[in-house]
Length: 115
Length: 116
Image 1 (cartoon, chains in turn yellow, orange):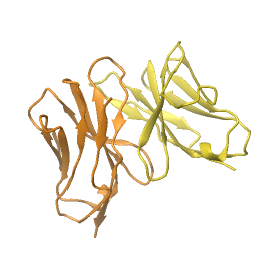
Image 2 (cartoon, one colour):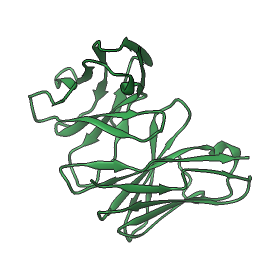
Image 3 (spheres, chains in turn red, orange):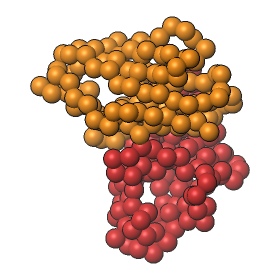
Image 4 (cartoon, chains in turn brown, orange):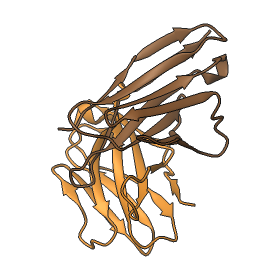
């Protein structure tokens, strides 16, 4: 079935540094990738929608300069958390639509801890 | 804007018994999809079941079935013969039908514990 590979699965970084999270669709082309953020014991909140070859669309309240999204190819979308701060610590999950019967597949998530 | 509500933050059930998780939603759309996703401790989101709003017949997937009441905007999940592996967070989710590539709107989740 359709698989989205998300890396890294966890990362610890120092305040002020940048971290890149990658999501790759392994056996299908993902024209659209969604990036969600999940705080502990909370639900998934959409951060942005990434379309291949165009600028990402950010949800209200999400800082586009802090959360840089690049979707340069049909199989790769990246989220870069720039100048990370402890409040950016969270679980980040990507999701892509597959072309099979309205299927959506999720990456395995990235736990980011900023110290 | 669409909203999804899950009124049960936590539930527990004995192994082999049946449990029902509640979900209500609010939308002005007529065509949409509803989903139940499971998130075990691994945090991987796993699709449990999907319902198209235009279908009157309730979706079923093995031990999982839904009670979809469109007029009441209710979409409950019934898990029969509960197994220890069903222990997880369960999220109800809504998606508009309009265009290819819609995002999910998730409910706050229900933490289900299956007890031995």
